Image (cartoon, rainbow, N blue to C red):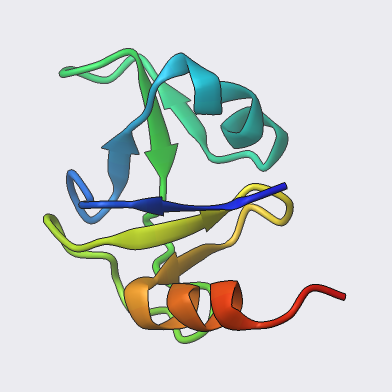
Length: 85
């Protein structure tokens, strides 16, 4: 499955997502619902999976749909550039 890049985080805790990403968020225990401002959200309050740095509002970040790991822009770019396997 892909590593998805988000152009900008909505907040330090969560970012609104569309229905196409819901199954990945559910499978990786990152789905939030019942919040004001949208129907489905990706939870990223634990920050970058490599160094724990918080994802700040307006910053890009990555979501690994296989592992559920959230990565900051730097670590997400590094993972995408690594050869598979």
